[in-house]
Each structure stands twice: as structure tokens, then as C-alpha cells.
Amino acid sequence: MIDVMMRRRLLAFVLVPLVLAPLAGCGYSLAGRGSALPANIKTIGIPLFTNATTVFDVEQTLSQRVRLEFIGRGRYKVVPDETGVDAVLKGDITGISIRPTAFDSNQQASRYEITVVVKVEFRDLTTDKVLYENPAQTFKEEYEVTTAQSATDAQAFLGQNSNALERLATDFAKTVVTAVLEAF
Image (tube, rainbow, N blue to C red):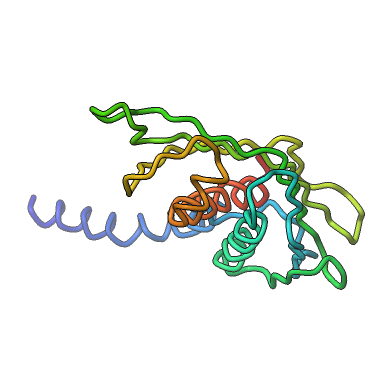
């Protein structure tokens, strides 16, 4: 009796992996690591975003963070030009606003919500087809005030708190690149 059970377990131990092995390459991948882009896209141009807001230099930071996020995904060569590339991602920053969301005991703002609105277009230059587009990619995030300053507009807050701009740009870049790569 024990011998029969041992044989069944051994048989199951050997056969189950053999049966399941062909299913291992079923096409699933981790979220954020896949790509819905055509295979012909190897080089992506990401020129400097345009900035229609009063926040100085935000286009530099957002453009660079989006480039770094694409590079971090490891599949594409990324350049800051729109010539000599397979695809181009353009961004137009159309709005940045800030509003306090929490206050301390002295009625000073201690937390802010920053909203960035960017027109984003990702175009395959080989086929001249728009693969992803969002005329108002809206990104909102709340940030703690790390110093005793108080800001009533985005220019003042982001100018005084470069860490908030860096965090915002990194989070924004992840959102945009994921949307482009996963065709959302």
C-alpha cells in the first residue's frame, strides 16, 4: 500500500512539471514592465516639453524625468531630439495649480495638492500614427510642507521646495510612461 502511494507521488512529481512546462510562456508579465508598442520602435525622441505656465523651469524637470523613466524600462534608446528617431513623445504643460489641503494649529498650510495638466502625444514616426494621446493628462499629488514656508501659488511653492518638484516629476513620469507603454 505504501509502495503504491509512493509511486503515485513520484509520478505526479515528475509528470506535473512536464504538463505545465508549455504553459509557462503564456504571455503574462508584471504590470509596468510590458509594452504595447510596435516592435519597430527602438529609439524614442523626447524633446523638451513646452511650458505655458508661470512656473519657471518645470518643463526641464518633467522632460528629463520622463526620459529617465523610459530609459529605466530598459528597452529603448531615448534621445532629447525629434529627428532620427522611430517615435516621439511631446508634452505641452498647460496648467499647474496648488491648493492647501491641511492646516496646522496656527492655520498655516501644512499639506498641498499640486495639479499638473500636460497635453501628451506619442507618435510612431514610421507610420505617422498617434499611438497614445491625452489632451489633458492630469496628475494630482499631495505633498507635506517640509519647512515653515507658506505658498499661495505653484511658482512660489515649487521654487522654494525643489524636493516637491522632484517627487512630482518622478511620479508624473511613471504615470505617463506606463500609460504610453501599456496603451491605457
